Figure 1 (spheres, rainbow, N blue to C red):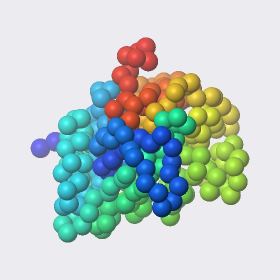
Figure 2 (spheres, rainbow, N blue to C red):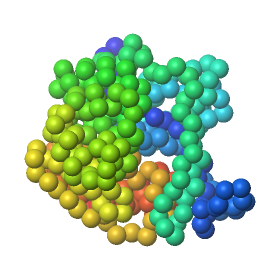
Figure 3 (cartoon, one colour):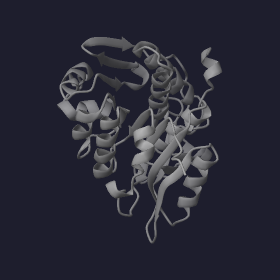
Figure 4 (tube, rainbow, N blue to C red):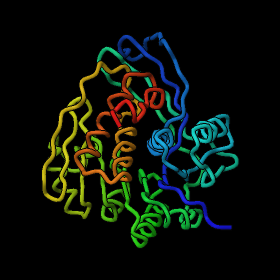
Length: 297
C-alpha cells in the first residue's frame, strides 16, 4: 500500500496543559486562588500541527507518550483535530509530558511548570522516513536529539524544508540549526546563546551556522529576523493578552503555512505574528487559534 503523504511532519513535544488564571503571581509559601482553569493539549510541535490542521494542512506527528492518565488525552487532542498520530509511541510504565501553567492576564505573561516524558526518547529507528521524505516541511523542536538529527538528514537529502522551533538552548540544537532552512528562536534562546540580550547579534551568529532565515521572537516587542543578510524587524500586533501560552507555537504554524503557500518571507512572518497575537486572547494555546479567513485570506 502506498505511503500516505502529509504536508508537514512534526517531531517533538506533545503535552497536556492545565492552565489557570491568577490576579497576581504569588509569593513563596502562600496560597493563591486560580480562576477559569482549562485543560488543553499542548506542546510546541503538537500545537503548531493543530493550528495547521485547522487551516487545512495535512499533518503527521511523531512523539512519545506514557501509559498514564495523560497519554490517551494527548493523543485524542491531536486525533480530534485531524492530526495523524501513527508516529506516536507509548512507553509502558512511564509518564507523559505534562504542564501546569499560571497565566497573569493583567500583565500578559505566564509561568510554566512542566515535566518532560519520562520514557526513553524517540530513536532514529522509530521514525517513518517515507513520510518525512514526501513531506513539504519537517518541523521539530529538537527535544529528541538523535531522532531529530536523523529526520533532518533525511529531509535535507530529499529537499524537504526544515523549520526548527528553538524554545530553549538544549544539547544538539545548534547541530540541528546547521541542517535547518528556517531557525525560529525564542528571546530566551537567543540570550542564552550569546550570553547577552542582543537578539540581532544572535540572529547574525545563528545565520553563520547555515539557516537561510533566522528569527528571534520577542513577545510583546514583536520579532527580529535575518533573511539572507537582510534585517526585518516588526512590532507585535497590539492586543490585550489573556495568556501567552502557545503564542510561539502559533507563530511557527503561521510561518509554515505561508511557506507551504509560497508566500514571501515578510508575508509569512506577518501572518505568523498575527496568529500568535490572536492566540493570546484566550486561555490556553489552542482555544484562540484563529481562522485564516480572519486574516483576510
